[in-house]
Image (cartoon, rainbow, N blue to C red; front, side, top):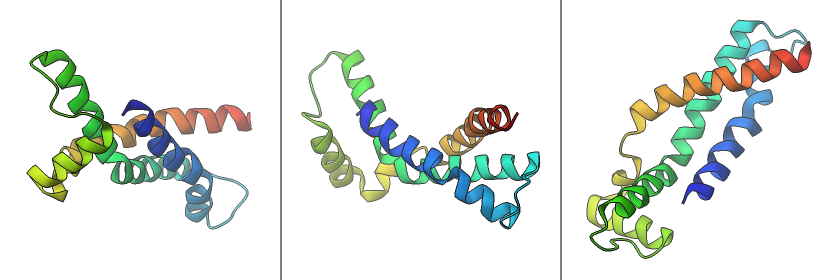
Length: 120
């Protein structure tokens, strides 16, 4: 579950960063710090919107391991199906709002710092 989360989340946030930065700078070679921060926030938020179900499943598996009362989910696929069946499809996106806020900030710090150092 953790690997699925990292692969989906990192693919979106890192893969789209340069394209989104170019969109905000309208193709200019020079990207201001503001454009970079906006691109980092945008790609962080988009990544959460895409990867939130993997985060929900990862957290449920962590909680399941700590509870020790037995296994509710037999596999990640079973977890996705069970959550969607029992809580509705929207159950896979529980906690999206705080996760978007957190990951937009974290993504800004990581990618913008990296981008600035790379340019220097």
